[in-house]
Amino acid sequence: MRIGLIKKMNSIIRKNRLIVLVTLVYSALFILSPDKAIKSIENSVYYLLEMLQVLPVIFLFTVVIEALIPKEMIMRGFGEKSGLKGNLLALLLGSISAGPIYAAFPISKALLGKGASISNIVIILSSWAVIKVPMLANEAKFLSIHFMIVRWMLTVLAIFVMANITGMLVKKKDLPAEEAIVKSLEIREGYCIGCGICVKMHPDYYEMKDNKALVIKAPESKEALKMIHASIEKCPSKAIIFNNENEDYPQ
Amino acid sequence: MDLFTIAFFIIAIVLTIISLIKDKKKTLTAMKKSKGMMGNMLGEIIAIIFIIGLVLTFIPPATIKTVLGSANIFVATIVSALVGSITLIPAFVAFPLVGSLVDVGASIVPAVAFLTTLTMVGMVTFPLEKKEFGTKFAITRNVLSFGFAIVIALTMGVVL
Image 1 (cartoon, chains in turn brown, orange):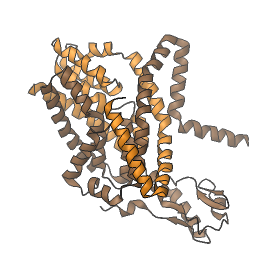
Image 2 (image 1 turned 180 degrees about the horizontal axis):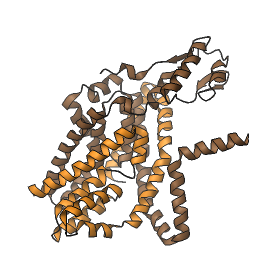
Image 3 (image 1 turned 135 degrees about the vertical axis):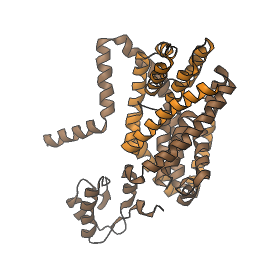
Image 4 (image 1 turned 90 degrees about the vertical axis):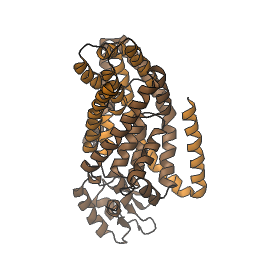
């Protein structure tokens, strides 16, 4: 029992390594130099408020992308074959966005999951970070309109070149597959007879709930996938299905 | 809250309502999925925000000003690009800061390098980017952004 608890604690710490680290640094700072620690927290407040304003919107947008917009539309707009039009569309999406770059991560993931190309994701992320209408106005005011326009043009050019280079270097298989696999490993509720074989075979991946089996974790590697395949075959009612989403990306 | 964010709030809510009317079950499933995804990121985002607070305390705008205005343009450009990669200061602080320097005659090359890496390269957000998009993607994007920030800065030095 105790070993299990320690294991669980370990996995929680591993999952939240960054938070643990930050907490430690702040604790040390509070002891060594309390005024610096307080100053740091004060500095963080502005960004916390910004986050609270932006994240609910981002949440709703990812939901809309997931539920309302058909996959074909995303593929046509942002997919591998969308070409220059796709690039421009991505630039537009990134430029009219609100919020810091991390707010672009969930949206980009949702778009990737629906077939957007890597180069278009780079365009969205980069323009999301750099190009913002209120920011451009600020730049023109404090530097000059001329300065702002030249920097904007050079930045857009750089983003397009970067997007193409990244598109060539990084392939879909280099991205963490988690999202696609979660979706692809399913148990058809109506077919599951609740025998519990899959849970017995892989308690890490399946769980029983109300006499039906549930997928609780995605297979994170090819080896895990192979292992999971055994449970798919053992299932007496063939209720577990696995469809690899990545296979239907047109190359 | 600025006008932009408010507009986005309204658009997002309207679209979500449309989605709910069109297919309630699908929308609720999507909400569950998004909640999981954002929940995973939330802890890291909060950690990142507190790192930003730390960085701002130890590299305050006054220090950045000294770096940007230093005499050796080549060194100043590289250091400014590095400082821009590490810090994340709000745009409404960054532009007046850079503007005041350029007004007193500092070179614009380090200034542009700083402004560009400030937003495009994220050392602080790197762990999150790596987790969500993979190591190769995150490294490629950030290294390229850093390189191009310097290219943009040098080009602007020539053009302006």
